[in-house]
Image 1: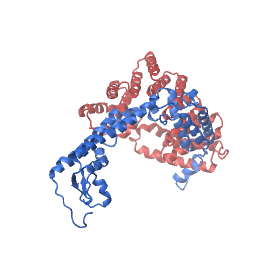
Image 2: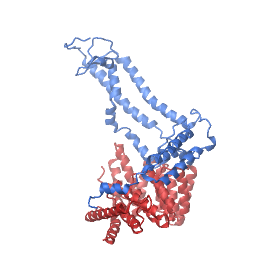
Image 3: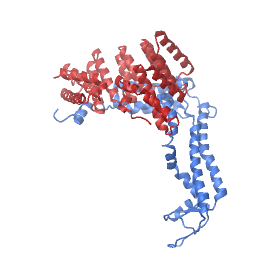
Image 4: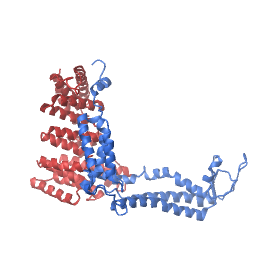
Length: 305
Length: 267
């Protein structure tokens, strides 16, 4: 039955693991026709369709349009073309294989048509927003996203996207607000905590510097507390605490901790980052997907030597 | 009462075993499986919101609950007060209602409201699925097999089990170890859950596929409002919950905390 597929490769969102997954396309797609559609264990078949969906995304990213088409056909054979999620995937496929600008415009038109019939088709709503963004109409995308979030305020993914859009438009405080909303839905996600820390660090140069930097340090610390070998968390903590110390903000307002704590925090972060870089450099193959992060961390460590 | 120490012996025709014990068990297992698939077949997925306003009405409540539960791990005081005021004002003024103009009017009669009707039909279908086969099988057993003693348990039991194991057999002196056919039916009814689990996979495995594809739509996933409930009343009580909430933040002092918990002593 199912060949052993590395979990890491399935979960990865980076290009290398996408490539690995896409190369398994013939194996995964050939599997079901061999073992027959009468697979008894429904949990297993459910897993199988999740994998086909991931495979389709990976194939689209790596340019294997033919396999992606196969995946899509298989999914719509099972769930019917009117399933909302299948509609979203079909839209994604059309967008990815669109030849020119006018083809994309046609996709947009199609989405609008679908939405006029069923206004709460979430996958299509999201595709439309993503398409607006890739058509270089960020303000339209933002207003559409706000409309979506007004109706569905419990979607962390959408809040993160909104934060990203706001940041690309240089609207720092709005981006911070959106990320806070995402965190309210998923309060223990260390990557969002660290992302919020990054945003606060970036926005700190615009005004109210000491307070924002203090909060930035807090969020980086929280992300480390939740995941104690998170590279980005340590990296950000070093940057943020250095900036607080350099500008003498330590202990100024109620938000920032004392100078001594910050110095200890920075020393601790430097040490742990050094350990992480060392251990991951040894196990190079396993961490191949985050090599760029590793290089940046090394560079930062060299600066403080 | 049975005489202590003396073993009661009843000569049973082995045909009792083949023609009563077996058929009852097999029929029970088969109806259980049939019922499972009938439930899967007739199960209608929860109706998802059809308009954006309806989805907002459903999810505003969840947003407030999220804020109450998670604010302490994310927000500082200023951000918390801002969100709290926004939500409380929205709940109080009815801004999150699907239909702000209908506010204060009595909720629609669930009998005439199509959504309520659907939910009630679902409940009715579920109940019917339990009731009808049970009634049929029980009357079948009563008509054909009532009064048979069909098996002897290999271990002694106290007298209290008599009513459970010997329904349909009205003898005072029979030892409690003997089980009547009707009781065997009841034992099967209660005790076959694990057999079904073994045959059909972990509970509701057949349903998983439908849920999985529905997952992409968070609006369809949850509906905190039961049919017939007045969302306005729930909003008002949620606003009260929010208002009495005291702000604290676990981010305060997080720096010292991680130094204490993670950093080696030398730093």
